[in-house]
Image (cartoon, rainbow, N blue to C red; front, side):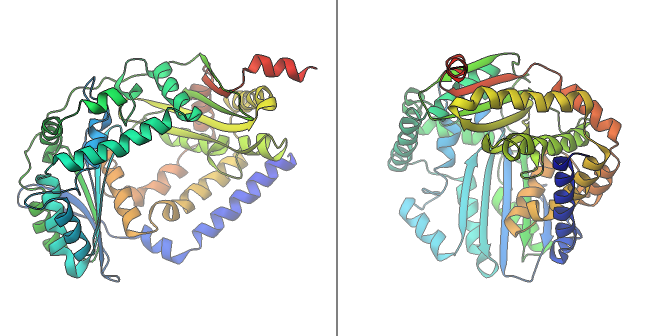
Length: 449
């Protein structure tokens, strides 16, 4: 066995052993997840933890920035910046004071396929905190002064992004691989689209999006099931039953193209896309294990070994399985000295080709299984907020309330043949490639001199 391969296996075993021996995380793996259903039919997953007087709630409504109407890109993002800027009979200043008095932290954020909300609160002030969350969810004011102020903040970011090569390139990348699909639109919007969004537009989307039928909730901390049931109705029980969302089509990224975004930079960024895998696909776990060996593991992956350790071409290199509701892909990203960009791109392609043709070794697979099983708790269950976030994502993926208990067996059941088949399936395609920096042809010519 080559020295690099042995290093990867030993390092991965060490990481796996470390994670497996942490008793606190093992306790999290055994945590009891209850399903709580309120009188009005609002469901949530609850993990009771009375050791600390804190409560964390995380929730998401289906439909995120992909729901922005054409010409109103940035609407959902703008809306999520306004929920703590006044609600009910409390204007912006009054709402913020009440939030501070309650010792609570509240945030909302827009993703492509969902509109997320979170709150952390002291359990002895949960009545005040949940009351404010109720106002924010049900009765945001969308007053003119906060809209103008938050709009100006978003616009400032848009203007800054127009001068940032990576951001400009990423937007061109999305248009190249997604075409006219909503996933190609800028989440923050544009100068023109942002300027045209009105308070009535925000109210209309809030009414269409915030409904019980598209809601997923998780709660962790110092609260029991009976109390939570009442709070669920208080916060969400008066929302409409059904969402009114625009249909979003599934889309496959357009591969087999090379996009060069030319800037005179000392460092060139590289991004490559191959087909991905749906979360509910039978070969999902095989693809996850393959990706971890290819480039998912920070210090032990094949890409890290070949690009960073052997050749010093980049500080970091990684691969990720990107899973959206309507599209998925496997992305490889890195950045290197511009005069070595062509060489780096060639090495990445070579490593991926080797994985596609031959797959991993039995030793790599065994070590990666141990690492992935052992690392799950520290990556996903290390705080009340992260547990709540994980439980919401499990609901979105329809994995079942017992998934954490079943996960290790699902990973263990994957065979070497399964992983090799997943590698062939995903990595044999001609990828889409984006290069941000000086032209590769120019650099290749300079390298020959």
